[in-house]
Length: 397
Ligand SMILES: [Fe+2]
Image 1 (cartoon, protein in one colour):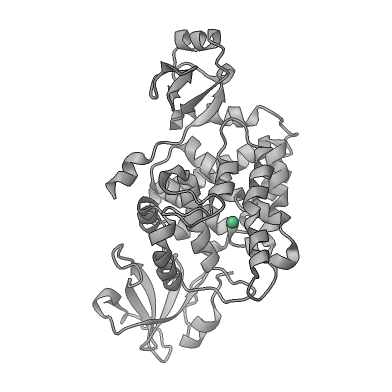
Image 2 (tube, helix red, strand yellow):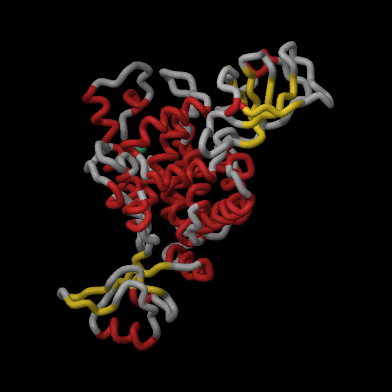
């Protein structure tokens, strides 16, 4: 398993030599006609940049640190700034964020404060970049697509992906790249015939083949907005590849699949399972987790799966359970080794009475006979909920 970690490299960005500034670090070996000019990790100083210019090098791959965020944004934004309609931008931003259900916002779904802060900062930078590029802004205007049935889960994928990336210690520029990739990865679905996307029953082989084309459509759409080493087209193309093979469209394996694609591939599956579809109800988090675990043997890198479990709450803040005893409980903490058996606080008796002053903790991991029977997530905590409410109050969608 350790082999996996050593193969993962920090994502780098393709930058025109004219935009390279002294102090940037080379992300890949730089070769010309089979001759090694500079090694990965070399720091570019004015002399080296000048020599590369003389050799006729047009682009280099560099890695960015947090302090380079402004340079990175400058590379993305320099092309085509639309007029700065600040008020309009704020309205669009807020409207878009409303597509993210309350339970999937960072404060409710990320496990620790540092990650929440980093994700929120990245979201703000993401909008700043989108509003500074006419082509990205046009993409965001397509965000109505997130109201389409098969794409409703994409804003949740976005949030989960950011939590995983922040948990993995990505720098801000890298998180920003992941953010744009995780926002638009399924945009190719817009070109799949609507009657196939909204078909309630089982898909025929031909129809499924049509759906699979969305990764090609997505890559083509995103290549048009992707300069300077953006990962968006690649992630759109690869997010259905499986770490141990068997995915599509190229049946890639292991770390030949970009780390962002692995993150988005995993969070896409989880977010989709947690969302109601035409042909099925949503799954509860522990059911979705168990299905995900069954798939992880073939689909997901162990490193990414562990980061997901460590940094995304399986039971977002605001969750309520009805236990097999009829009592109602809230989760206190979720053990990484047994995520579907949280430690809970029992707040209501089986007959629906609030246990004021008599609330007690219970460790489900130590009590295999006690089951979670139903589950709900609430924006607010009603002071008096009955067991029946848990069936009806679910606000997942
Ligand atoms: Fe997809």
